[in-house]
Image (cartoon, rainbow, N blue to C red; front, side, top):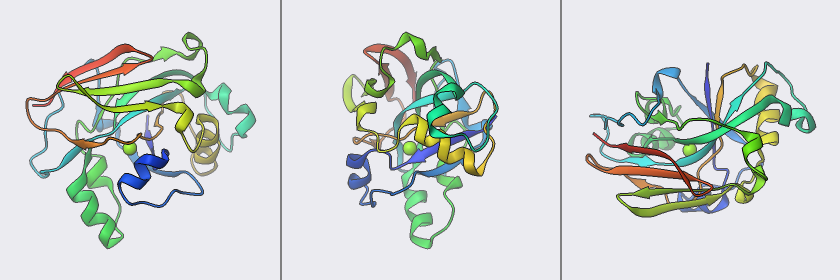
Length: 203
Ligand code: MG
């Protein structure tokens, strides 16, 4: 399986990092070795001193597809959950400055913890999903999919023009504003539609 991540999909977040609001989805990938499940700890990497949390809605691809038309894209995912796109912001800033790829800042081990996945039919409107991240008991990110620049369908359609999507692939759909650093001994709790779906420590 592969993990595809959309960057700059919320205007307020693009602005907080001084990025332009994109005309097309921006995407990058993480390897499957980045995945963390079952609320296992996030182990802070020794090569960074500025790792940020980015809480995101994650969709799980349910069938093989390529060059998927946007109007059919809803048939290609059937589960949704949350994930944290951990980012070594210091390394990313250096890579961006030099115009180099982001993998060392985005694809490292433990950089993609995800919640359980839930059937999309559990939710009455995927275009209005609320989600939030509490860091040590204080809400730091509070998002809603109604604020996404590119919809799930648009993302699937765009990405599948370039690479075949396979069952089990995950798509991180972008973070809202409020990203910030984590530290060893922090506790992260993430809520989807008010229900706690992630609760894990930084070690
Ligand atoms: Mg992200």
